[in-house]
Image 1: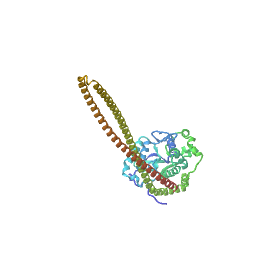
Image 2: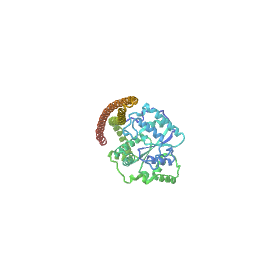
Image 3: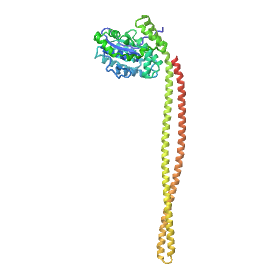
Image 4: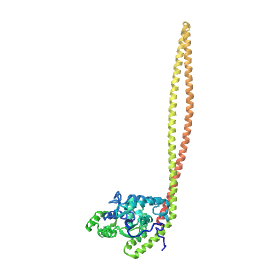
Length: 459
């Protein structure tokens, strides 16, 4: 057996006397192993286990957790990228993680929270499966606050836990079984030399009266309830529907997980099995250190995947911008086309006016020719009118020239805009080609990840 240092050896808490220590009741165990049920029963037996029952999502009777404690423990796990829903949750925490200076403010808030809560009750307890991962911190807090922990260690068939996690979180059953093994090893090794009661989930349905009696005796609160009231309360909290999987009695897929669970069940009454599981827990903790290279590789792959996703997002953003610019150019072309059509209409109107003026001039000339001999004064007047009409025509023709020049300029602008539009279309096609290439790269990396995950699961 590989010898390991004590998990809490990194702390230098002040020594306290074991006398006058105030009890604190802590439920350990994996998620979905019956910790919420146990918490609700302990509350009925007189332990202050929660400030509220909590939402009943996934639990018929509520979670019975202290959400402020859950939030702080999540904060610690997230600091090391070990949050429950993170892909790296199942990797071990770094060695001596509890000594990281950046964690001390969080740990201080956790200690202050417990110190405040225990002032108001003589039987304070809490339940959060994350506690098993962070026991070195809790052992320091218990020591500093002169608390004597009494651990209730909830265990359950790993196959049932894995199936429940699959239904609630979509977690792969093989990962769920490994996670269950990790949690029970952590719970065991930190409570092995402490005041601990191990309760199997199935016991609540096989003999709830005897199981609740064992729990009440272990808690040492005296008979705050009569046996009759205790049995009524427990029967109210326990329903057969809560143990639907127990009737099928599934077995864990992984032999090591099956063996560890059976060995732990035997360890409750068999000293030899207890020592074997202690040795197994030490070996398992040593084995987990071998996972560090895989965590680095997973982190690297995740970083590469995130970079590719960022590139795809950037390409999509650029494509959207180009599409917007193309739309703006199309609107500009439409506006120029409308302006050209207006100019053509104005030119046609000017040509019509010119035609009308030319017709009027011809008529005047014809009238002037007919009356030239007889009406000299009229001829002079007519000549003056002709001159005025010519000036008007010249002005009209000048306007027409200006309009034609404007039309020519607009045609040049339209041509430039069409060229720009063609360039933007070319850029968009290049961007779309780059986007397709990036997606193919993501697919190739995804094809690489799938064999890696299969290899990790098999190994």
